[in-house]
Structures are given as structure tokens and as C-alpha cells.
Amino acid sequence: MKLDSSTLFREDLAELSAYAVPDATGLVKLDAMENPYGLPEDLAREIGTIAARAELNRYPDPAACVLKARLYETQGIPPDMGLLLGNGSDELIQILALAVARPQAVILGVEPSFVMYRLIARFCRVEYVGVPLAEDFGLDLAATRAAIARAKPALVFLAYPNNPTGNLFEPAQIEAIIEANPGLTVIDEAYFPFARKTFMERLADFPRLMVMRTLSKLGLAGLRLGYLVGRPELIRELDKLRLPYNVNVLTQSIAARVLAAAEVLDTQAARIREERARLARRLGQLPGVEVFPSDANFLLFRVAQADEVFEGLKRHGILIKNLSSAHPRLRGCLRVTVGTREQNDAFLSSLQDCL
Ligand SMILES: *Cc1c(COP(=O)(O)O)cnc(C)c1O
Image (cartoon, rainbow, N blue to C red):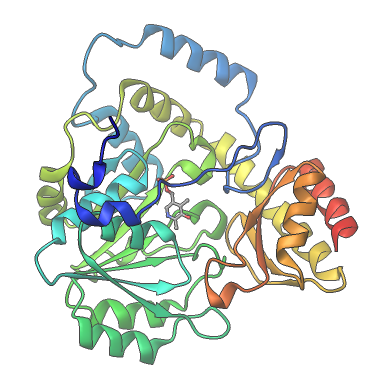
């Protein structure tokens, strides 16, 4: 007998689709802002030992004390601020959305930006308002202020640098938004290792400001660890909505070890920044390619025939991200993650063939 799931679940579930991740088997993977470098052999071996010794029969430390201490030591987190860990920053976005989910609550973001803000707001039945960015992908401060005055958001998300556009917004404009916003403002610094600009030191100045980061783009996407920093009073409340063992034993022990090897991750981030500059220069030299400035580990660029170029690259064995239909402002736009020098060269020469 056929099962009619629509009567069993909330009505709006029928309109949603599961988050689609394309199969990258056999392809050069430049679609998801992953760090292309593995860990050095000796560190990888040490992680093997840590994994072998981990007490997998025990629940993880629910407070993740060792890992949190390591994050405070290595990530420039002010000691008087609270820290909340998530299974990726996606989980932190979910905790934030759940925490503000009163009837009539609004979450506000800019468009185009990280799609999870809108999606998770919907999962939590919170209205989402997206304010269009200016022509150059900077903030439209007047429009954003007007939208804030109208919607009185409980929560504003600003990705700094923004994904998928790659740019940093003007700090003075961000400050104006934090001040105008009656609710929380979360600055999402997922790309901090490549931009090295932060609002972390400004937390003391703005009580409703929070800073969110992740280890995903830094080189540990597979471990799933995000963190949220803000006033201890805020973190204490948000922590009530965190599932008790959300950061597993292996993530806690391995992330703590890798963070101690700061020079490894710093060197890799520096190489990615150098490659970003080279890739941007080379892309900009290709006729018919408009490349946008980026402070992240990816580049957004526009071509005349984005769908054809995207499919052509895939036939050449290279997977990037096609954003052409994601938002009207992204018409013709593709996004490529900065890879190793060899990967970037392969991408560039294939792109030339596909244009
Ligand atoms: C990639 C990305 C994240 C990371 O999410 P994780 O769940 O930590 O992997 C968060 N915010 C933005 C803007 C991103 O681009």
C-alpha cells in the first residue's frame, strides 16, 4: 500500500527538497571551498594514534573543555566572552533560529548570501527577509536600515566576507546595522583565515553582536566544528537548545590537536591566499570573463554562457559551482574554490577551452 507522507508531516515539508550535493567522484573538486591540502604525514600519524586511543565507548565531554580552552588560546577569542560549539556552523545557525523563534519573529539577511540562513529560518518557521545588496555586492545601507525598521528582526546574519560574492562589507556600514538592529547581529566569519579581518575585538563594544566561525574552510570540513562567540549571558541561553553531545569524541580530540599545530594551518591559508591572487589575475586576463574581488578562498566570476561553461568544465573533469540561476544578481556567475597550483592551472586551461 502506498504511504501518503503528506498527512504525517507538516504541510510545508512537501515544498522543500533535501540539500543537494553533486557527486564529485573522479572530478577535481573546486565547488565547496574546501582546503585542497591534506595534513603533513607526521601530524596525520599522530591523529591516527589519537583516534586509536579515543574512548569511543564513552559519551563525549558535553562541555568540550579541552577543545574550548584550545580555541580560546589559538583563535583570539576574548577571555571574557562565552563560547558555544556546534556540529559545523550550520548547527549554530539552527540553534540561533530556534532561540528567536517566537510567533512574528523575523531573521534578516542580505541577498545573495549564504543559503543556509534562509533555509534554516524556514525549518524553524521563522520569517526570513533578504535585503538586496548594492550593484557592486556591497551593503545597501539605506535599504537595509529601512528593512530593519520595518521588520524589527530578532536576528541579522552578515557573512564577512560574504559567500558567494567573496567581498568584505564596509566595517562602518556593519556597525551602523548592528546599532540599528534591535535584535542580535551575527557576523559569520567562515572565511576569516583568508580575510584576516574580524569583529572579534568589537564584541565588547556591541552587546548584541556575536561572531561565528568554522574550521571547515580552514581545512577540517570533515570534522564538522563551528563556534559562536558572544556575551556569556547570550551563550548561556543558547546553550539550552544545544543537543548534549553535539560535538563528538573524535572531533573534540582531533580538532584540539590540529589547532595546536597553528603553523600548519597558517601556512596552508597563506598558500591559498597567494594562489587566490594568481588565479584572479589569470581569470581576469581571459576575454569574456569578469572576475569579482575576493577576500575568501573562492572567486566569483561571470561569463556569457554560464551553464555551457559549467557543463564543459565538468566534461573536462572539473567541478565548480554554477550560481547562474541562484539569484537574479548572479546571472552568468560561476564560483570556483581556490585549489592547489596544479588544480588551478587545470581549471584555467579547461576554462579556456570551454569559453
Ligand atoms: C561554508 C560556510 C559556513 C560553514 O558551515 P559549516 O557548517 O561550519 O561547514 C558558514 N557560513 C558561511 C558563510 C559559509 O560559506
